[in-house]
Length: 544
Ligand code: GLN
Image (cartoon, rainbow, N blue to C red; front, side):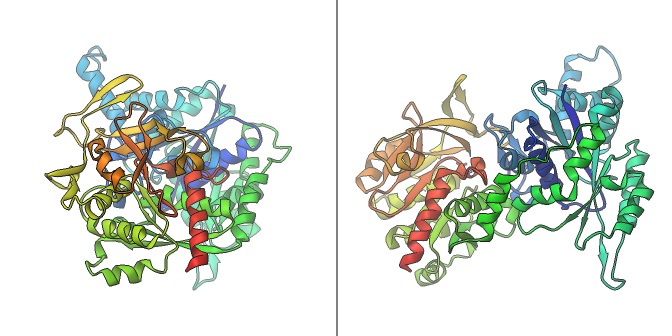
């Protein structure tokens, strides 16, 4: 039977709870256990799909088409286990299902309440589809003390009772701040946070203490005493040089050992961490560096492009180079060509990522043009592919008013809204004016690549499956005009209706993809497109 590890956070947010959960899962996996990570989000949105990236960072899309919290990206990157719809639940989704049941009369006249109905729904979610697992790690979003997370705390408290002490473990992440004026680390916030947790009926088994300075043994002993945990279960967590150093660092600090001890499981032999060692060896000893310009809209917040950022780093790991990312705000790109050139000339490659809405689009189109004309490697992802097609239509195919219907009515809809497409289950239909939430082509779709294309060479295959998240599609009716002008439609949906990839054979590296390859890249298995893109940037760096 699967064992459950519940992960909570205290004192402040942004301590790296998701990363800790992902690292712990990776450590257990490296010991041969089968793991799955889950995230409970206490907010009321049904999923993060409708939230601005500025509010909540990137929306991570799973193979099965769920729009989820970006922590699920960490989970996948650290464990290689594909996340599923059932791995992320919000209060909004729980309430939605309860209210639907209530309206149907399923509660047979009962008063519907937080306890037991909401807590039962949470418990059901935690325990669904876990038969083939050794450990399920459930991370609770937010910080102890939040009003919103109370039903989740109550549900995990009950789960310990339902499942038993030897099947559950509570891991609590806190902060031990350093007060410079006193030259001391302070344990009081941790004590208070654990007191909050125990007042909810949860006694943590393992405490992970984020600190900027090493935690002296006497402070560790003090935390153990006041917080009622064994001293070896107080795990210091110092800042790491890279997120990929975190699993090994947590192992050295004793995290996986403490968790296994709390379950009464053996913690010898040590896990095999060679793959993490190899990644760090490559990151710490690069043989060169490249600078990639990312021309986007949400460049002010690194979390908005989390997976993209990581996939570029993975491309660097594969090529043994350091990847510097220059985030360029497409909106600030002046009309003035010489200014665009001065910003883009120092770069070894240009990438236009996914995005929504018209703002900044002219800057993106200008960047595509620069990359095409100057023969600088160009990678367009989703909106970045659509911009590449519009740029090609306008500047090479003589379709001056080419645009996308996303930006308003147009006579030349090179990119347009699709209202019908095929899925494995059959024809999928959307109303043009429908809800914004959950109305996109989402999740994994197959693509067929032209045998002699650049991308088929990169993938080493003509059959691919990649994740999508978009409403609009490049309009196949413009394919002849664009191909005539030098752009090749080298990847299509298997029925030939939807363009998946465009490329320019007369250019050193010019590829636009309708999907999001960054979502599937792993540090130990870099995505072929990012590996090849960074290799092209390395070549370019030798020219400039
Ligand atoms: N806004 C575009 C669409 O909906 C692109 C979306 C994206 O880049 N993810 O089709």
